[in-house]
Image (tube, rainbow, N blue to C red):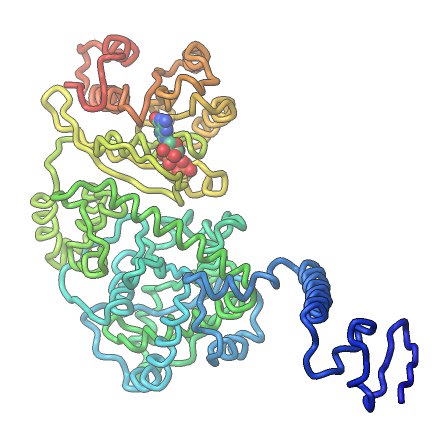
Length: 594
Ligand SMILES: Nc1nc2c(ncn2[C@@H]2O[C@H](COP(=O)(O)OP(=O)(O)OP(=O)(O)O)[C@@H](O)[C@H]2O)c(=O)[nH]1
């Protein structure tokens, strides 16, 4: 029997009589037989393929409507080693949230009364607290590898660096005191991530460092997310005199403006009475404090968004690049050379060697170090030793001057400095200077050894508050523009206004049009530079950090001018810097000036 029913244009066959079905006449029903023929299989395959394509298209449409971040998060997180992958799946994020639930965003502040190295061991409760939580937390932080920045602030000699080294390396080196120069950081672990920073000489004398978090822009989250640990010598007295000394209490971390809080703490010490007891000898105690602070204040924000984490990574990378750049420019065999391993970094050399190693990252700074020796140090017998060390480590010089490089970002300030100092050109990718840096070079001027301490400033607007603070004691300013960048030339007037506002009245100024090797891309004529310089009565020349043209001449002219000013006898004729430059121009290549 054969019955045919038409359903939606296709035919359904009664299974009872399939054998009698003429296969060619009803090809679509052949699927009901056990072995479909080749053409049917091919058609079925095409239908399936079509449906699969439709499915893919729909999926694509849905995915394309999702936010980019969501679309990329999985591969991004898996492929980017900078992101803290290992955090996921642990209880660290939960811990962050628990700890930070009631905190507002903002820099954290911890007040620590400082103890000198001669102090007694910390109370046992310190050890206990750290043993129970500190080491465990430290492990978690390491795996999180947070690039959050901590700044230790306090008067010179209160023990900031000792605490830092104790925290970072787990050791305390007693004895010789050597003041930190400028601001330093310890790139911790072999991946050189920036983790900690130390502020020199206390907050009141270096307020600009504390201002950095306020002036930072969105592209400097590292600076913004700063943790200021203030070490207050006055508090030390209070804590020591109380008997028995207070045991360590929970860390008081409050979101606040660090600069404001510093002032508050000066005027109102009792509010800090709960500050925890801390000593550079108390390794674990300090670790606990810092880690808790990081977890408490930074955790929520760090854990909150992928964007935040990637921003941190970018900034960390930039700092890493800066460190690498200094390595690159350091010549082997000098005290500036460093190898990228933790053991050779500045903080491993305490007690006098710190500043000697620091030049690799911050520039050599013996003159500052000498100046920073206080009566207190002289009394405790360290000054003589330190001075002897300075003489042996440092190149001898008769007179020292501070010179600053100014100008818009990317005009070539760092390259000019590196060319002068090392005779090398920093090509490749541009890495903007963060904050301020300096290098020293001793030059011979009329049989006198003149040391130029050259400060390389960040041209970016957001670092202005930092650089302003350095203008005041600069004896010379080299103001650069880029001959291939018209706005950098147009901004020179604004720079000169700023200089007149912040610098000394008699500061020596020189205008430099850099990148003179790039003739094809020139947009600022030499005559325009000359005209502007004439208008302001400052010497001018075009330089090239790439070829070295006029670089040494610029610094030497400055050194000569400053030396003559400093040593000029009443009847001696005045040194004419303009004439000197005119006579020497075009003679100097990279290192040819005698
Ligand atoms: N061709 C050429 N390129 C130069 C010269 N000087 C610097 N550059 C390049 O210009 C870019 C910026 O140089 P930097 O020295 O880092 O600029 P900077 O003024 O220090 O910038 P900030 O640190 O942001 O203030 C880099 O890519 C350099 O390689 C030069 O004389 N000639």
